[in-house]
Length: 270
Image 1 (tube, rainbow, N blue to C red):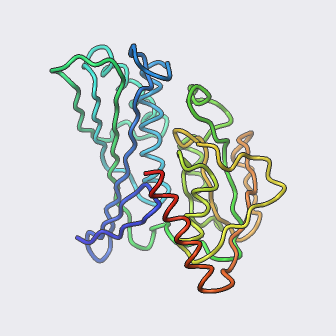
Image 2: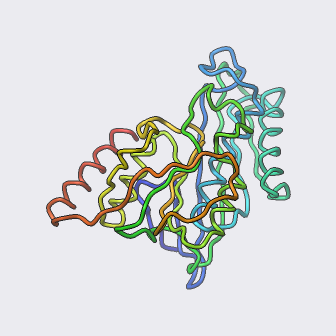
């Protein structure tokens, strides 16, 4: 099996054979929950639901179909583990994936004072369905949902944030190309990484009112590319903003310098 290695993306893609890819995505969550030393106090079911959402969104965004989950809970089975799993199951139910198999582990030997959680989702994708690197110079970039983090993202049903069903709807709209859930890098970081990956430059829309540098926490929004302003009425009140466009690099030197700047930024963050 050969790993394709998409730097700057939160997924790993491996060629299984001549027709399919294996896709893996994971998300970690620390100090967010009900433990004494947690920095952000939210119910454990929220921790479980939002962490599961991130990993599921990453797999779905590249055109893969989730096949199973791995859930590592660095806390006791009761009450933390049970409450976290309630949230995971709620998210799976909301995405019509409740029957998805899961391997679950909890901490049974040591007492813990902070919440710790890691979730991995494994999916399969037909090679002609993979949605990575489809964007081209000239495409516009849009943001679906608003970037929120910490206590701002404590409501999984917040009408301003991305839900799994929104991404599934977006996948079925002709004229949409790359789809990237936004996390701690912020909208700008994801847009610049995408642009660099396809040999383009991200040009910000000066009319955009969003904070492009703000963390989107548990993927409360996503960016996508489209050739034109397509009709997206299916998302109701969920905010959509045009954030810019992809432009041709003027010179090879500019392309190299832009790539080095983004590489340095990613290394600093991770």
